[in-house]
Image 1 (cartoon, rainbow, N blue to C red):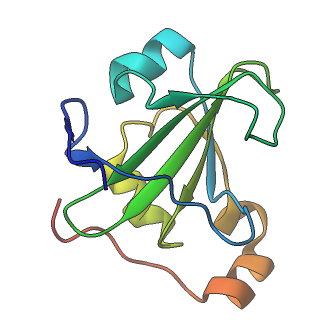
Image 2 (cartoon, rainbow, N blue to C red):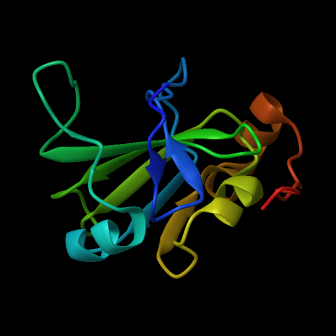
Length: 131
């Protein structure tokens, strides 16, 4: 674990959390300068190890409640530049409690594919109790 505390979010930088199925839970649009203002500088940029459309930048966080998340920011993906979020918990309300993106989320797996989400993860209704 990387122990540097991120000054932009109440979280520590962490090793990337990669779900086994690469299934993002949330997608949002945000210009790059606003992304950096809200999340801080990228933790790393895309390199030859990455297998996705680029260019991309990445952020990886662990919150005091134990939630880990990985954000992949895509500069040129439709509908506009923005990110996809994978997390150690599928509880999307909990994920969004931690991130300053309420104004720019355009896709949530639980809303886009409710039957798939319920079958795979069950009903998720939590919020973070730690903050």
